[in-house]
Image 1 (cartoon, rainbow, N blue to C red):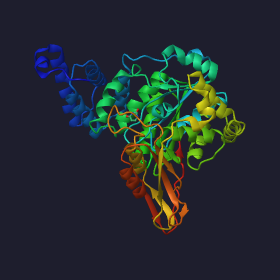
Image 2: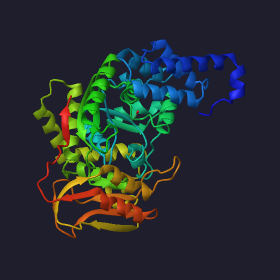
Image 3: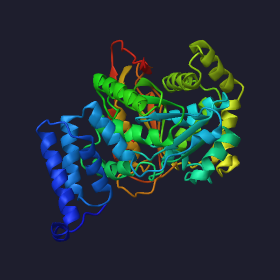
Image 4: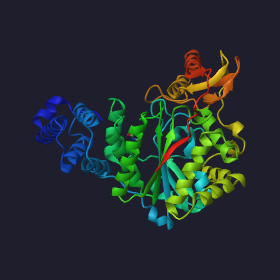
Length: 451
Ligand code: URA
């Protein structure tokens, strides 16, 4: 959003009043005074309407990020993000619908796996999804690797898609939460993403606008997470669950590990292939355990009486009998995908070049730094280094080892897939991401806690 020229603002009584209001709100927040709900809603509405410039809104957001928010303030901020937005009407589906959200990470292919699993179990899923953020991949970018797939469905296509197929995945629509759309873009470039109240209001406002009957959150913790510290990640999870409940949205959550990349594939088409392989029965450690845990909670969110064992058996059945993979293909084809690219994943975008990274010592892998792996993929075009950069959907990384694996000198640790970009720097990042030790290593669980 481009700020109004300063000269105009000074003489326009409406914008002058708005600027005075945000300056006052920033000052009060800085001094530790709780803001009134109307004050918060006014600041956000003024920014969305272009009545205050980005620098004043940035100062307000930064002050909130430093000072935090009370429950009342957080609820008001969430309401402010939703103001003048469109709400989906999933009630027309006729049966309970579930939604899920991950705070994002490296090699996090979970949406592409759990949505068809849950839908194949007979529980409809509606999922709006976004692009990559920094070094963490985005489901929308991954899905764009599938030729023909339409990812910006009109609002009136969603319910028919859920009714006929059982699931829908579509790009996040900015008109659902205008306040979040405007402020998120600003936070992204002003270092104010990593704030518990700002993240909670941003995520939950979008989920309230979709308003499924149940929501499952996957909150990451560890070096590659938005909030790396585990106790802060717990606070974020509890904050989001309570906030969603206050808007009438029943929510369960997992706190999952992002101290190493989640799955072996990191990159768009590579992750689509990975998802199809898991849906076809491959049980990649880490990624599979998390997918099974999220699927279980999604099934239980529409049937609270369903035991863990019964839910796990349903998940196991749809993977073993092929119906989860069939669901993915049926859904993608219904949204325009070329069926040949899904029945023969060799036809998905593929990078022309490979570079293997090998172990220079023998020992046990004691760490794989997720941010370095994520940044390596950005350097070869699997993610964006600048806002509008085109992606190389075939590029990325395949990890051959996980934390706890024993390796010998010369063993392959990872493989870089690339066409262009700074492959040398990417290889150096990948090599540096692996820590090889000589003792035993505590392997982190895929799921730290279930809420
Ligand atoms: N994802 C969101 O949608 N919002 C945030 O603030 C952070 C991650």
